[in-house]
Length: 300
Image 1 (cartoon, one colour):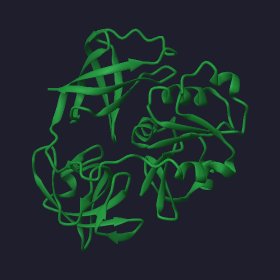
Image 2 (cartoon, rainbow, N blue to C red; image 1 turned 90 degrees about the vertical axis):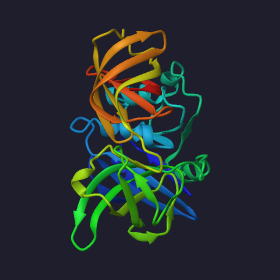
Image 3 (cartoon, rainbow, N blue to C red; image 1 turned 45 degrees about the vertical axis):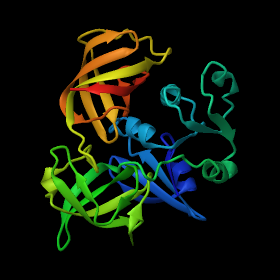
């Protein structure tokens, strides 16, 4: 079983929890605890590659927030966490009890550093192994002697070798082999960081943010969301305003087309793969940057 863990604020804490494995826009960490695998995710630099922060917040099953530095960034991430229905673990490096009185985080818990591994592994995600497979792609490249290789995370279902997946155009992609932790495996469950050797697609035909799935997921130019904004944001969303939308490994500028109550319709600057039920985060330029979350209710 796998646990995708977001560790957005403290690389020292990430290195305590798990061993560094790879680095791109996000640093990946791994640690085996019995039959459970913790896959930690931390942004390389929130200021230089801000997109990695909403990506890991969406992908993670649990979030660990370091309270070692109570600064503006800590406040931003804390507000973003109020938009997520996820377990949040806060370290006890600083006393944040007064701050937490005004924050709605019903699934939060405080923990000493030494308690973290037990707490993390005691709260396993509920997954449907029989659901239609979806893989969020982070990178795609060519390897001499192997061909097209994609790195990504299985977000739904059970991926198996020789499965046939589809990209946004309906192109058939055969999974020749699967690697997890640099070891060949025959199947991968939700939350697994995978390297896939693929047949039927060239490396320049796929990019960060793509989704390979059992059923075709087309690119959307317009998206309707059931959304909520943080009360701390003080943002009046109006037609014509521009924001950034994150889904999986996709990060795209959007323009508000209409807003009625909790229903928001946006036009995407660049079409991305989205389907009904997908979760997204919405960001702006001023703090708190991540100020709203939504669920896709329709695409065009």
